Structures are given as C-alpha cells and as structure tokens.
Image 1 (tube, one colour):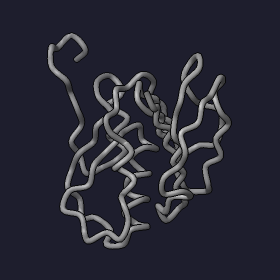
Image 2: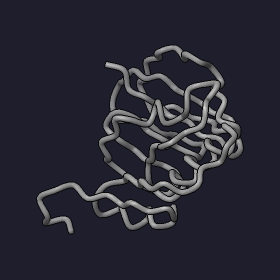
Image 3: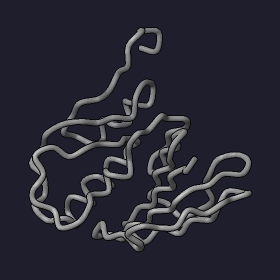
Image 4: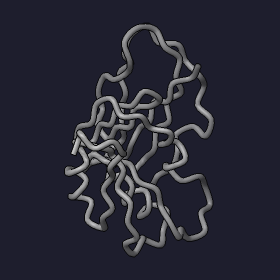
Length: 148
C-alpha cells in the first residue's frame, strides 16, 4: 500500500477500522447515523481519535457552538497512536501527559470537556521551550495547535 503513488484513506462507519489507516492516512469518513445532540457528536469524533483517525461530520444538525473538528485540520501526520495523533501543525489527544514538538514553539491549547465545550473559546498563544504537560478532562480532548 505504501508504494502506491496516491494517498489512501479509510471510509467506514465502524471506527475500529481506523486502526487500518496506520499505514497510509488517518482519515476515516463515513455517513453513519449521527447523534442529534452536541455532546453525542463530540463523543462520536473523540471515539475516532481513540482509533487513530481524524474525521469530519457531514449532514450535521444545527450547532450552538463550533464543533471540535474546526481545530483538527489541516493535519499532516507525523506519529499516530490510539488517542494521540501528532501532526506537523497540531497534536490531537484524548490523554493527559506531555506532548509537543522539539525545540521552542508557539501554540494555542484548545481543551474540550466531555460535552465538547471549550474551556476557553479563544485560548492565548503561548511560547514553549519544552513540551508542555497537558491535562485532558475525563472523556474530553485537547488540541495543541502550532502558531507561526
């Protein structure tokens, strides 16, 4: 699969198939019946991250706040593990711990609770000289986005 000269992705309703994306692209698209509430939609997206993929929601119901997927793209994969997706532009994690990029960098940290509500709607840009310790709420998610 890696010798093919085109990007591959996984299109499936079953998030467990996301583990099959590890050799090519961490995109899992599909159109399963979506939850109707925003907390359910957040857990739908979070579940795909647990299985090593990023996703986008199609045919979404009316939302009262930005969806977590607004901070998940663009994503150029560097290291993909269940619940922790490291890209050149951002790190998407469902786990607390230390994460970041080598050297000094600037980034914004978006932290979502289990309902998909942001702790801060516009988090400040911070400078890091080492990988920061990130605390993810139970059943939540955090996205560390590099700022040029």
